[in-house]
Length: 356
Image (tube, rainbow, N blue to C red):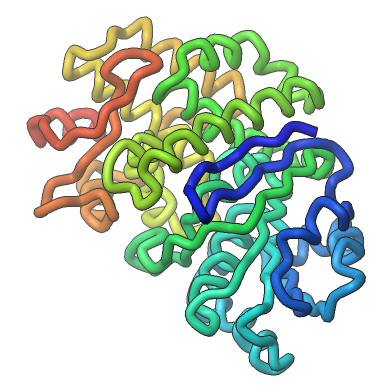
């Protein structure tokens, strides 16, 4: 087992990465506050993993909520199912919520924990690669709105993150690839050596080689933990983690939540960011080709859906947390392995990029 630390002073917490960690009560129990535990999961994850996860909390008063599975259910209406259970069971403000699932479950359980009685503790047990390398770390929680993704939420850090890589063996191929998009992101924004490692180990990752997956997860979590510790509330450098996301969120919203997976949207967004960076003269076409080649190698899309015209993309990109005074701030590549946050570009360059 590998242990990393998210350094946030009194609110610091560990990330545990290993195999067969799901029911390890000795590992998880120290992060439970009070005697009441609510496990939040979804229909897909419940069947193989809920019973095992609940066994870690055998000494507590437990309940669980099984949400529908899919990005289209990440909304306020479904969120109320968590609050309904908490209130009906008379769970108090010492309750610990446990997020058992992918990014949607983690975001919703975390948001419920942030809001219930103005804040209760929670634990992240991510079961998808995307959640393990990204959404479970850093304290971003929330739900979607029909007009914009993740526009309703709160920062609420977990007490710990427990990553059992064995759960990836039951993850479908499309979801595995979607998670690898977020892994590629870390190499592009600040870790060229990791990007090069990914170029050489793509086949191993797709084959679910445990050693390769463990390394990629640990490296991704370390890169994210460093940025979160430096800039918890995304007022500065943490926004680098949004490489590809402003484009990707627009695609997800415009196509209808669940039609394009988050990682697929990010993959297309990273290609667009690379192409726009090349138009600005910051990177060359060889760099763009390397980005596209790795994304394609991970079985991810690289082209905008035909329905997402430049006009439609721009409309959704305006509804984004990174917009300041009407300007769309983007994360672009100053060079391969170094990203920057900027709104210093001519609108025509963005428009031309979206038009292809």
